[in-house]
Structures are given as structure tokens and as C-alpha cells.
Image (cartoon, rainbow, N blue to C red; front, side, top):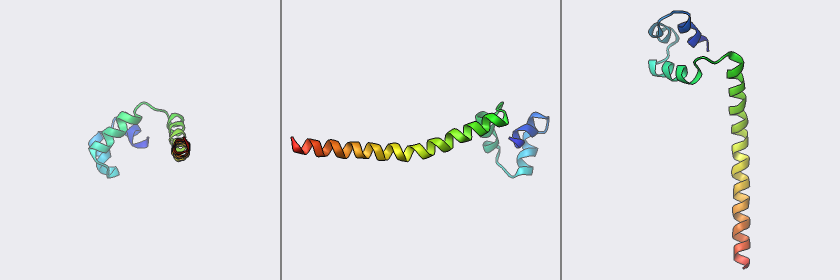
Length: 77
């Protein structure tokens, strides 16, 4: 966010990239993803990503259990 704010305040993107040692492609990707966001929105987004990362393994495990149960029930018929 600080890097994006620097360019919003008037600094050249190339200068900011060089000083922070990031590529122009990375800067533009960040700008497209996070440009215009406030800090609290970014924190909320990160919280949602963390929660999603925790839930994905649980859903995968649940799907595996369902698949196993379907196979077990299919064999009994």
C-alpha cells in the first residue's frame, strides 16, 4: 500500500520500482489488484484470504469422506 501511495502522491512509478527493488510488472499487478483500496479494506481482504486458506483443506477432506462413503455404499448394493 505504501508503494502505491507514493505513486498516487506524484512520484514516478519507475522511480518507486527502482527504489523498492520491484519490477514494473509487479507494481502494475499490485495497482490493478489493490489500487484505490483503503488500508482497512486490505486488512479485510487478507483476513478473508486467510480464512479461505483454512477452509479449503476442510472442504477437501469432507469431499473425500463423501466420496469414500459413496463407494462403500455402492459396493454393498
